[in-house]
Length: 177
Ligand SMILES: Cc1cc2nc3c(=O)[nH]c(=O)nc-3n(C[C@H](O)[C@H](O)[C@H](O)COP(=O)(O)O)c2cc1C
Image (tube, rainbow, N blue to C red; front, side, top):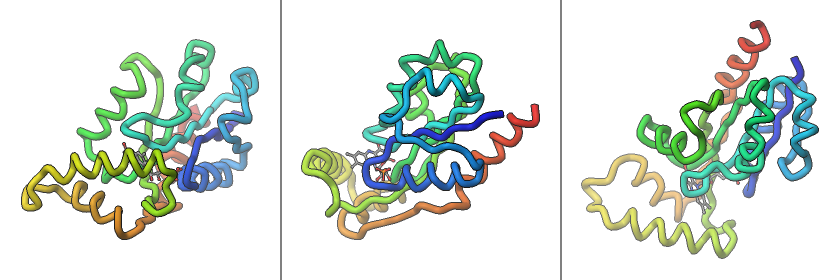
């Protein structure tokens, strides 16, 4: 089966994961902007990676608008974010980006965050988000919230090549079917 990895990354983590996955699958890796739907139709397994922006998987709409054309393809999506993923957050991300009827396998990978490197609009958005997080009393904050707040002052990088394993395994299973 022919595989391709397409991605949208702003600060590099998603790109890093896309390239690691491409190396493991020994397949083409492309930025979403450099490929169109007709190119994608040449592949059986389409792996799309996008970074999480306020719960939305960036770049995915560019594929999703043609989801009907991709009905016979295996679509594997990985999102990259800062959160510690739990069922509630995952459910929210799924709800924001897919319909129940979509035949999509979704994986979440942890990325990186360096406040100082953000563009001005991203800083603004993250400052607003920080204000919301800070409304909680410190003793009531969960690990995720504490970690997020710490990341504003201390850059974090959770990218880890081992975390792509479930994605590679899922594609290998598809290829055996
Ligand atoms: C404006 C903005 C919004 C973000 N929203 C989320 C989010 O909703 N959930 C999350 O887990 N991470 C969120 N993040 C963290 C990014 O997804 C994380 O830094 C990711 O690694 C960025 O991917 P990239 O390096 O490929 O651009 C956000 C970051 C920024 C700058």
